[in-house]
Amino acid sequence: MRHLKKTQIHGHRGCRGYHPENTINGFLFALELGVDAIEMDVVISKDHKVVVSHEPFMHHKKCLKPEFVAFSANNHHDFILYQMDYEIIKTFDCGTLKHPAYPKSMSYPAYKPLLSEVIAATKSNRAEPQSKFLYNIEIKSEPRQQGISQPDYHTYANLVLDIIIQCQIEGHTVVQSFDKEMLSTIRKINSNLPLALLIEDDKDPYEHIKELGFKPDIFSCQYQFLSEKIVASIHQQNIAVYAFTVNNRQDIINMLNFNVEGIITDYPDLALRLRDTYIKPEK
Image (tube, rainbow, N blue to C red; front, side, top):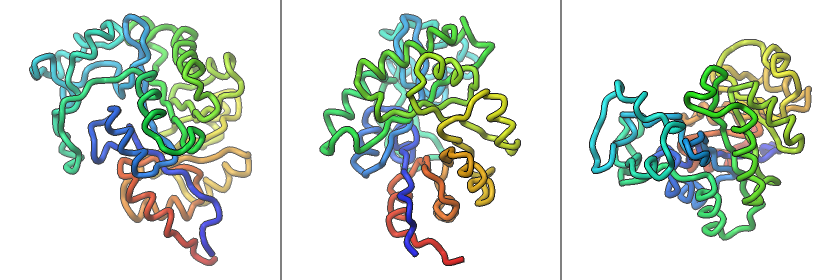
């Protein structure tokens, strides 16, 4: 029997396996491959711009100072994005350094783009109608970082939601976060936006949902902590399941067999190929 539900394939940080993470070229390449969603991370700059970045600081293994000057981990605290205007953030190169975990990834000068810039670029370079793909936006936040690497929760949430609404992508956007307080804040501001609770441990899923205080639309879990039984149990609560970050062939097949709604991967070409040829084993 062929897999009945078409599992969405999300390009992790664009297309991390082939392009520098969270770059416009990476997102465009993922869309060229035919992904169902592009996954990205956002933080806030000093001048309250919504910046696409996995860390709220310049990481020494991913970025170079202007003029391609390297720096050490000891300097991370000097380059917190919430303490830098975007005009300065954009002068750092975050594409040239090669990451040993991604040998196939291209290397070229690239900057951390604005969320609005990514949306504009992907809208203008997609042949199909906008509704054909999703934006999976992860908000990076921590309770103790208010005023240090992020604004207060209400300000942070509104800055991101304003861009989503202004760019008219509210109907095809999912917002995800590990931070339960951030998800709760967003739900109070906008009850229509689908929210995904990110989890990377083996604690009972219902304990996480209880702590969240409401039922999320999506339970997005590190794939190693998922099983067919757990996924089926979450489905019984009418909650969708995403698995991340799934890069190995057999792991992707396992997630398809578990009937997850979404697979977040650095290698979306592999996941798409497996998804589109997958045949569910007979019980």
